[in-house]
Length: 467
Image 1 (spheres, one colour):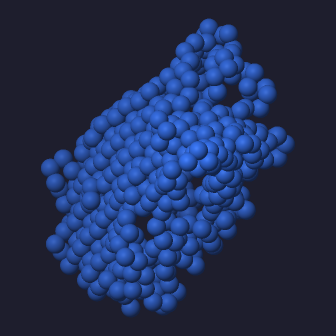
Image 2 (tube, rainbow, N blue to C red):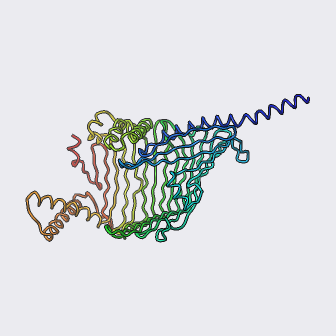
Image 3 (cartoon, helix red, strand yellow):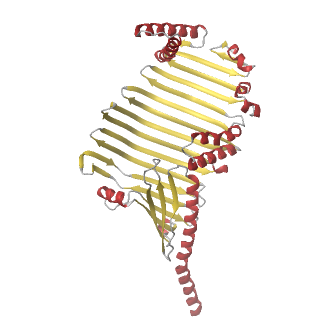
């Protein structure tokens, strides 16, 4: 009996000593996988990431992640910073963890020396991560706060109330949830002040087929304010209150549906005030396989040739037909805004009634044979008059140039007013738009071979394109 007990103690002791080393081996494998996933997700051309050396110990290991930012300017030097990871391979039973990781941002020496004035020896960004026994991981992000002068200049004030966040993922990093909270950031100097307050962001995401992410996200911002005075441009005043954003992307068999809503309570741009802004949009029936290929192509071009916009467009074109092949729909459920000139509101519905064929890609006018369009729009009368007047001015100036005539300001204004009134009356007479109280409104309905504008048959307007 005593021999059995001794043997059991030896086995348990051996396992206790050996387990941390085996956990370290798992940590090293996980480290490599995480960096491979990170490299696949990144496409910002000036930023690259590499895994540093993994130094595995018996109970603790050290590793690092190196980021390199290369400015687009030719003579600018690259900026290198890294995250250092201190890995404990002793299980943390209180947190239910197989291992824990303490990560901290390490800046270049000169930047680190400068940041020490504000945050002492506290890392600018740190993370406490717990790897659970099932392989899932929870990371808590934080940064220190600071309020005071910049570079001992009392005329320059910085307020940074820190950052808090959490990131959770399953063992394969296919299900990810994250939250981020930034209370206040502001910077003030002799030229003015910039402030952002109460930023929140939350997301629940799942990686599906074709390397696409699905799920929900929402963000909010209490306030953005900018007040500056420049010798060249003069004073600038911007104030935006209560911004909110929600988005949803979901799988629908082989298709993808995407929706999003953006709202703003009020905004003031140098005295031009708007309120109650809403943009509510949804896309349906996008081909998932083509969307995945499109995303991959964009990432590749952004990594290799970000300075060439033609390459970006060329990489997208081969996937457009596939993306739109399954009778997609676009719905702008609401676009609304209160402006000093009046209220703007509109709705749009676009849908393809048949799958795209090659002839449509070769001749886009053929879309008229397979498209359904519904548009409702209502704009303040002063805004419509401004648009018509601007177009009329361009037409009058062009005509005078062709005829080699030089118009006085009075003659130009008179001709512009005449053309504006003619165009306005013509549009009203043809019922291309109708009066809607303080607004001019239009309702457009199109199905193949038939166009109706404000309940009037306007098919002859497109007969040339349909031939």
